[in-house]
Image (tube, rainbow, N blue to C red; front, side, top):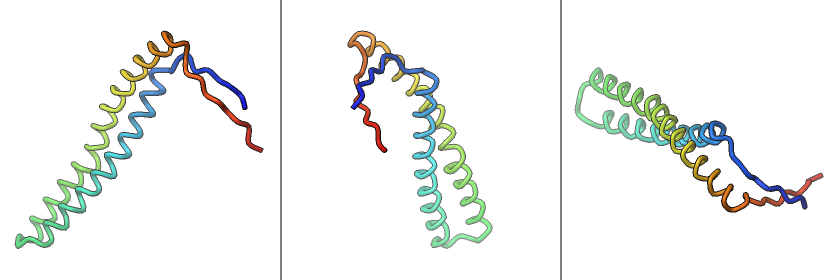
Amino acid sequence: MKLVRVGKLRVGSFAKVVAITQAIFAFIYGAGITLGVIAGQITSKSSVVEDLGVSLGILGLAIIIFPAIAYVVGWVQGAIAAIILNFVFKESNGLEIELEDVK
């Protein structure tokens, strides 16, 4: 066992990890919404052209815009969290983590 102490996080690096994670979850959520809207449009009594237009609009909104917004919001949240954690680490003498070599 090796004991390691984390004393500071790089704000940009931590923010990027949080942003990418949130963007992945938003993509999955957006894909689910898109499938739900497409299924609802297919089973409704409207025309095929209308169905296609609404479905493609929701597809673009949910699969492209949701992850983009989630990335930006996640980056800001990650940056704020890293700044707060750096303050906490400074005041509490860091975070101790035990590492083990695996062969």
